[in-house]
Image (cartoon, rainbow, N blue to C red; front, side):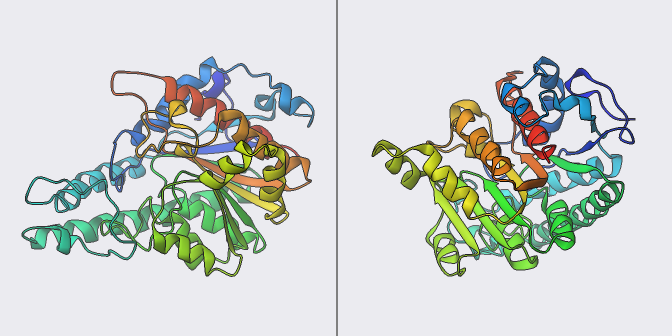
Length: 356
């Protein structure tokens, strides 16, 4: 039985859109809490007004009428998530400098496959824990790929609700296998092009590297990026146009110079192929909209700017075939603001995916 998201109960068989919740945050390297994101979004969804004026012009003013079903969290996913998070703590502690300078939130190298150089005394159990976390991540990739395929086979639009941004890789890879010309529209404060981070091959900081290196994605268009290393920038430059970043600083400079945001939006949309998957890390928005997300960064998109990009994608005749929303984290004292924003953004993603 599905969860009653947006206050409307509908079975997955009856729904047009199926949401897969993944409460996973094993590789989170700074603030914790994104594992509680799916549950928080579900609760907050009851406060979302179900009529949408922007979507009315596309013939879907009330997306819920198409049927939206959020699956219950799979027991096996939850078990793997808890085990991976516990093991990851051992690995992250290996990054603490002996002097007390905790490096868990810093990103010294995109090619860092082992915590050994960051630990004062490397212990064999740390390497064992790292290997087990990576094994859990591979398990999740395979599980989500199978689950996504099952619902796609039944004619559903599939959305993934994380969890940290490592979560949706299996779903993205499945979508790309079925649509070789697929483009990925990526909203994020980070480029996520690191080969690995803190030893985690399936890191939230590596997902777009994995998409580019392990799949045949036609184009990766990243919007709102403002925190990245030299190697990630070089990877984009050397991609032959396959990776197209719209850096936040450059976008803001153009806007401050009097350029219309719609001019920039037209460039973003123009870089995408006909079929589009949207991967949305909530920290792509300005931090006032997601203060408790794992790695907030100054700058970013307003809510309306982000939804304007989605609107322009479907205005152009392109089709959003799937999506994910990740890194939504509720406040430690029950603050629901992040989930409130996340629930509304998720409704927009659903609505624009229903167009066409």
